[in-house]
Every structure is written in structure tokens, then in C-alpha cells.
Length: 489
Ligand SMILES: [Zn+2]
Image (cartoon, protein in one colour):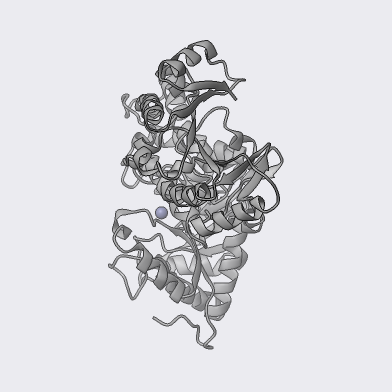
């Protein structure tokens, strides 16, 4: 595959829509990404849908650990039932009784996704919309979910990635009714539908072009594209689906977006370099990357006598009191991380701070959960402990449940003490305050983490947040019964 246009200049491409967390990339993702870079694809947006709300967590993890990869968070209309964790009668007609159940189901789904959606690497909400071709989820439920996501996108001010199949009129109507021009977005895999095209243009949306424009039978779509303004077009692969000619029928991958650029160039009568350059600039505008890239979080900072280390912005909880909900700076320190630091980088940042003054202890903290990166905590903690520093980890206590690893055994040479967010006095209150995909297992996981940490490390503090209406006395009794000390934070 050549990475140059006719003139021999290198293409600079942006695959604005791929599903990198899908099973078909599980065994060779690094090779796929290397081929993409080789083809000039320097930026990719991976779409965090799939397996209900779980795919979103995987997509954000993939983006947070790599440069040039951005993520979205949403629930595909096919998976409305799974995403809402819907156990009621899915085909029932809307009613006031059902509306209450829908509201509750959405509140749970939103709780799982909302703190993730605020991650600095998350550039959009999607793909969301309606799919009446397959009807994998009942239409009433799809409609409910779609409207809620449009409102969510407006509230957190991130653009929408729209999926519309055999439901274009209704998608257009909902976008209008819900005032989607306030957040903007892209009509992904645009089919050429006239009505949706008009509404998309008037609401300021972009149009995503896939390998379909290279198909022999797609002349009608090419005619529509010829009439669309170039500054509203982005290109995408929708990998692993929709491979362009000459790869049609094979697994699609981001490198092949070059073929979409070449076909667009022919449609518009411009060079492939120009098509690549313009669509890359458009995708950056769509996903507001200038704004995102301006975030420069600090890796190490002083708070009191402690040196705090910022490991990740990712988290599997969506606590109602989470500071992230108010922005990525805490106590005047910007903590938004576009890229998660490696051990070496974190250690250098720590050493720079240590050279400036005395510290009583080092605390792994940050806007996310440090034990989502246990290997970095182990390596950096070990190195700092070797310098005679006391090392503490502030954690939600779910690390072992999430990783399936005995982290408390792994960290004995790296960590002296833990502060664990107990957050509540019982499982029900915890699940209300800190929704997660682990449901009722989460609180049991936190308690067993505290007990085992007390056994292994001795110094464990269980904490609750002061301004929530938790029963602090009951939480204190529970903490002390497990051998931990207690603090209201
Ligand atoms: Zn897609």
C-alpha cells in the first residue's frame, strides 16, 4: 500500500471512526496501528460502544495509553437493551408506568458512563442513534436512549457521533427537537439520505464517509457527496466493517482510510493530499482537538507535606461527589492527562519535585484510580521507597476486583500504606453513591480489600466524603471493626 498521493507527498490522514476494542483486533492491534502510521493515519477516533457500556471503558483505556488515539463513549442502538440493562418488557408501547422504569434504567447507564465521558481523551458521545434495519433492540427503547444521549452531549458539551439506518427521518427530527446544534457532531457512515443531509447541514453537523463511497454501485452516494461542502466532510473506516475497494470483504482497518481519501479526491476533483489535509482538519474541528490538546495535567505536585503523583484519569466508578464532574483541575492543579505517564516519566516528575523541598510522604492519587495501573504504581513506588520515602496509595479499593490480580501481594515492596474510599456504611448506600458495573459486588470488594490490606500492611485508613449524607458513625464502626483507622475527607 502506498502512503503517498499522486504527487508523491505523504498523506496526513485521520480515521474519524473505528472500533479498535472489537474482538477482531484483539490479537494484533499493535500491528494494525503500526500499519496505520505507515499509511499516514496519525489520528484515530475509536468508538466506545459494544457490550452495553463495557466497550466504553476499553476504548478510553486504549486512547489514554497511546498518542494519536481519541475515544468516544456511548451505547449503540443495537444494544439499547444491554446498555440500559433492561429486563422489563422491551416491546411494550410507551406508558407513564414504563417511563418511570426507563428513567431509572437511564440513570444507571448514565451513572456508569458519565465520569468516563468527562475524560480528556473522550472527544464525543456516540455512536448513538436509531437502527430500524436490524431492529436488534425495540424501537421505543432506542428512541428513549437516543434522546437521553443527545441531552447528555449538550450537558457535557461534547459533539455527537450519530448512527442512522432506515430511520433517517426520525433521527433528523430528534436532532432538531433536542437542539443538537448546541453540541454539534457527525452523521457517521452517511448514506446520502436527503432529509438527514439537509438537517445535518442546517444543524452544523459533519458527514462521515466510509469505504462505501468506493463501491461500484454507490454512484448515487458519490453524486450526493459531490454536492456537499468539503469543509463538512470527514473520512472514516468503521473498522472492522465496510472495507473499501480493493479490500472489500476483508477485515477493515484504519490504514485503509487512505482509499476513502483517494475516492473523495476523485469525486471533488482535488488531489489525494488535499482530500487528506482537509478531512484531517475537519475531523480535528469536529472533535475540537485544539481545545483538548491544550490540557496539560501535572504529573507531580505538592499538597501539604506530601508529594502527590497523578497516574491516570480513568476510573470504573461514577461517584456522585466526583471532582471530575466539575472539571479536571483540583485545588488549582490541572490534573487532566491526555496521555498516561510511563514509570520513567512519573519518576522524573517526582524527582524534580523532590529536588525542590522536603516531603513526608509520596501519595499515588490523581483524578482517576491509581490501581488501574498497578505495574506503574509498583515500579515507581519501589524506586521511591528505596530513597527512604514513605509511599501511600489513595484507592477506591476495587483494584483486585477490576484486575483479577492479587495486587496487595504484588505491592508489598512498593507501598507502605493505603487510604481506601469506603464512601458508605453499607452496600446499598455505596451503590447509590458510587454506581459501577460491579453492582452489589463493589462494596464487598472494597471491604475485603481493606481487611486484607490491614493484615498485610497495617496502615490502612478508610475514608468517607464529608458533604455526602452518609452515616459517618456507622462507617467509622465498620472501618474500625476491620482494623482500619477512619477519616472524613
Ligand atoms: Zn461504528
